[in-house]
Length: 249
Image (cartoon, rainbow, N blue to C red):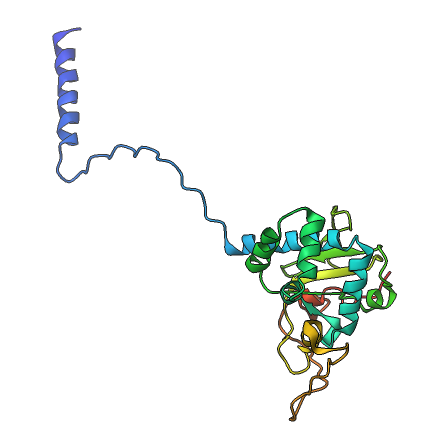
């Protein structure tokens, strides 16, 4: 290398070193070492959904027993709540523990596991949302147990062997469906607790001998929009009322 060329290279190196030492230019920080990634916390909604689906499947398995189907059909028929709804966790918590025991036995799980899911799930109601299904079902084993949480969600259903299948969100199947969905009913309203009173030893079906307090009650209402649930052709339907306005095929 010639002397003039060496001097030029040294000058360039000196200039670069001087630029890197300028106080107004912060040095580049070395990249941080990648540490272990903390697992994402499971949202409460995911826990509730999983518990709800397990409860629905256990109920389907329990309904394979003819005697238990008769028991459930009778309880639904005697419910004074609109659409003959039952509060699932309250039904499971009755003193005889018949529902809890049937669900645990059918799924071959301890009762404590079933109770744990009942506590983890959001409050649930249990009923046949389609009027034609309620009229047609005679307690037979042609039956599905379905569950859904989100607006316009395709319901997940279980047959009485516990097999899964997805149903249409837009129309019900021809097979009668019992729905396990989040509570949208006031089960503590006057007259709505009669079934629980009867089941706990208050006597016969129907109103169970309870006396409704005197006062003014609304016996009929009509809402153009309730602003809850999913919209179909301009009509609002809540998840719990899935398929209620659709005719059977």
